[in-house]
Image (cartoon, rainbow, N blue to C red; front, side, top):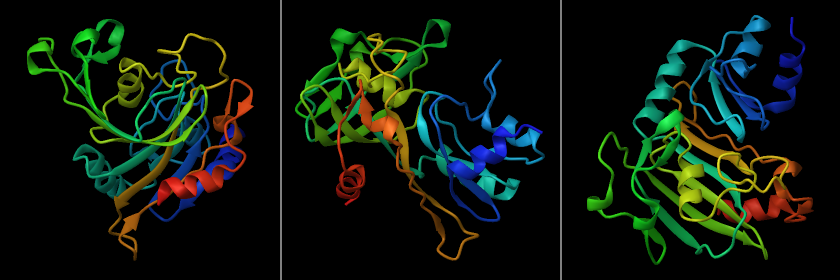
Length: 252
């Protein structure tokens, strides 16, 4: 038996009931399905626990992951992600300044060479109008494109970094990372877009989820997972000395 799973399960547990397990995943471990890489589902299976991933977050992203313990709950929850009724909020730190208090990135995505996700339009065609980024329909590249929308709010500014709450309305693969990078505000430490080499991790965290959960008396599943100190420490400097207060204000 692999001893990593019982330890990780205990240390990362956010909440659990008879149907679902919510974990605060560390950055650096995959949820499931990564080739040549250990993942959460595989670790659990190695200890005799069968879990069904409701959704995925990237290996480099930390935070909330929902794993169903039985197929009935799995189906009810995954349908909400598919229908985009699951409410998802992330935290991100960009290695940049100049973002507005609130913004909307409404840019289509496509998948290019080597399975890389990109904006389905030339970079120079992206237009900012106040707090909104778009491209004209005539500039969208031909092929299979996916309308994608990300909403964000700024919760902290420093001389070099910006902390955001981010809601991926459409939830495409790499959506938050690609959207922010292509408007000139890449996430600090993102291996796809930040080549500075000055950050110990990617500063993107799955913070809050809200879904319907009919088997619960409350009728909902609404876990929150605060990021660890490594999220707030950027290039060796802590961005805030009171993360709890900052997140409390952001949640209001």
